[in-house]
Length: 101
Image (tube, rainbow, N blue to C red; front, top):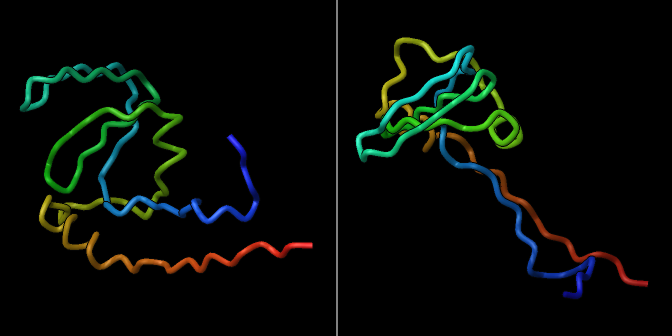
């Protein structure tokens, strides 16, 4: 595979959904509504999506992907999470070709 610095195939991505999460302080095992088993260890994160689905995210992956935006309060509901996610402004990224010599 030939990797070129000014390749037009590169794209910028960001997560587009808000989630609610808490870091585990003890092991956690649960089965979701679809019958899937989820296991987490201290340091991993319990993640709740705006649709109410819960999953475990390993600490290293979670902390690499998500940025804290503040504390969740009693007003967090699945519908409110989805509503807020649609209000988060999208950043436009302009791809400029690299200068060639």
